[in-house]
Image (cartoon, rainbow, N blue to C red; front, side, top):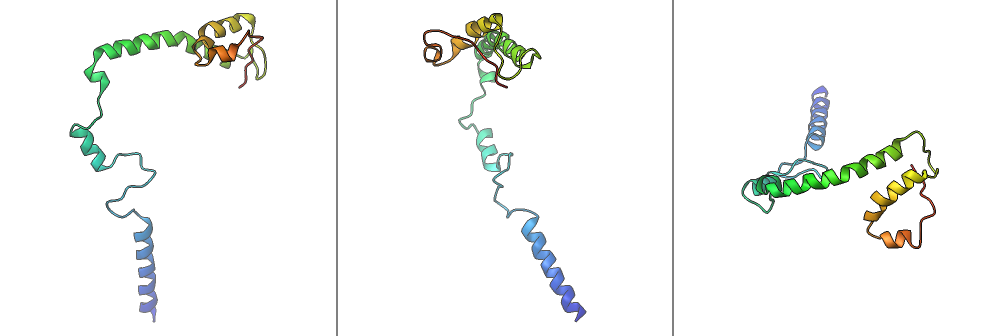
Length: 126
């Protein structure tokens, strides 16, 4: 009788471990971040992926120029958003409004629609 319970419990534990320990071989988890072996072999064997940094030094120079142009805009935005002087819903000072208008809003894809006939004020919403 004890042997029967032992075998039943052993079977239950074995099937539980088989069910939960790992997915079946040859399948990937949906949440897996690592590429499958097939994807890795495609990239290694000359797939369509091109590494621009290695191939085109001119592109790297252009990227550095873009970052150099964007850096002051990012610093201005961070200064406004992280400054203790502005709470959520407060208006910007005239100096900061002018800087945001000249350096940020000009690059908005729908600039004309957003500004229209003029700009009354700019508020901070955090």
